[in-house]
Image 1 (cartoon, helix red, strand yellow):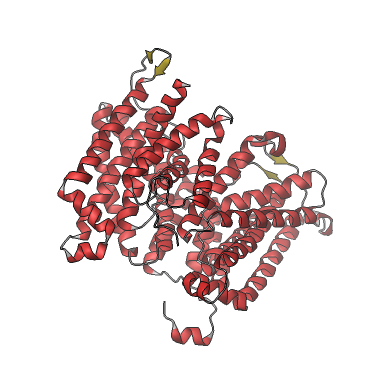
Image 2 (image 1 turned 30 degrees about the vertical axis):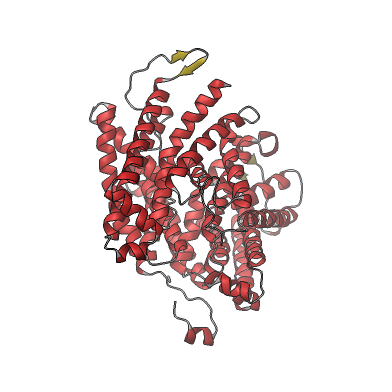
Length: 303
Length: 286
């Protein structure tokens, strides 16, 4: 039972990181990233492949974060001249292409065979038999650090600028700020967090192959942000550790309910996520959390 | 070379119907429907049920499935999209992604993940000089051309078509002139439901019926619609043909499994240089 709890919590912590990244990009910045899973996958592959080559895991993690940040920024640049709607399809296309390249360029990524034997960071620190617990601690620490940093960003002048570009890019442009540079920076920071989440995924499973990465990662992240309330980092965390925990934890139902296989359960879970998204957007568009705002903004604007 | 062109045109025709449906809903509702891929899958499976489970001939199953799915598309609009119509376009995007995930997984739940095929007799390809044409390709050619002709006639010469064009041009003015927007929206969803499920059947004939099929077509369909200028429905057809031929010609220099990359590169270049589309008018820039 404890083993089960630890593994579910680790998966949830990684999903929470992806949720926080999306909350910065979509919640705060209004930029829809449908290709989230591709960036996450890229992070996992950079970290995994470098570690297998003998690069220390923490260094590999850093390279993965920088690499994904750079590519995220590049994908945001493609939609320079367009409204946010196009960013959604561009990121989706980008992610699909990344997945294809990773699946077929076997000389680089081992293709469908997958990368095995990925070393975890700081593995020697934990006593024997506590490797997973130690890794869970590390993931939770990562979530905490990212949360604190993002809270800082949300309250900073840059956070205000990001919210302003979301609410009215025209006004921001008129005030002499570059909307494009804001978008690119938001995408880069979000990408770095996704790189972190992907690397942790690779370290945790110690084996990665292209089938592990699919739209379900994107779906969980959107669920966390919509339930948690767009722009509220705390809400996203709470949503991740309750809702995604429940969804992920439902795996044990396979043993209890006869005739229920892993693929049926996965389908039911994703069906619930999909309908849940639509229902929430209709009936509770602001989610259950609250975006940190200044007192003035609270009085003057009611969205 | 001639063979490549023929294959490319057929591939383009496969994209033409969903691309037309996508830009039709976009031009009337200003909403890019990301669920269009799973609509396609859903239509293909409905027809599969009629064709294989109930034993109807394929043309009858396709007709029944398309009409049934037209109803489903209207129902989805009522349940999911209509309550969100006054919100930002980004909210609608995310909602359509939710619809896509939900639909695709309903299919996975009932039909499983295994690929299936329609019950059609196997036939020898037709030879015209050097060019080989499958029976499937011929079916695609005839069905798509006929469907496009019907849509064009509806769009150009009927009252409904005039109403749709009026709402697409200026919804407020159309409302002032007494056009019932709800009726126009419902008929747009019905038309696009029929088009998308027909294309689902054709894609299922060409390859297999599987839960993933719509997802793999999502990116090419969007690219085709953007190539045509996403708000001009008939231009989307031209965009689809261009993309089909381009993808097919690219197989001369790239492995076949990288077709999606061709389509993405084309879209990225276009968005950077001519975001209003190859054939569209200049209005989308912001």
